[in-house]
Image (cartoon, rainbow, N blue to C red; front, top):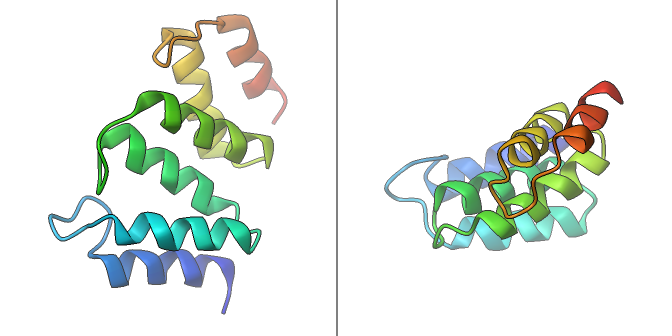
Length: 105
C-alpha cells in the first residue's frame, strides 16, 4: 500500500478528519504510521492536536508535530509552522524563522 493509502485508511477507519466519530484511535494509527516513516502522518497529528480532534486541543503539541513534518519537507506543515511562528500561537513568536522556512521550499 502507498503512503497516501495508509493515511486514507487511517481516516476511513477512524471516521474521517473532523468526523464526530473520530476517536483517539486515529492518533494511535498516525503514531504507527510515523514509526513506519510515513511523515505525512506527522502533519495530521498536528491537525488533530491543533483542532482538538479526538484529543484535547494542545497547540504546543500541534506545533511540535507540524515542525517535525516541516523538517521532512511537507509544504502544508511548513505553512502551518510559519503561521504559528508569525502569530506566536504556541508561545514561540519568530516571524523571521517562519519566512526562512517558507523560502527554503
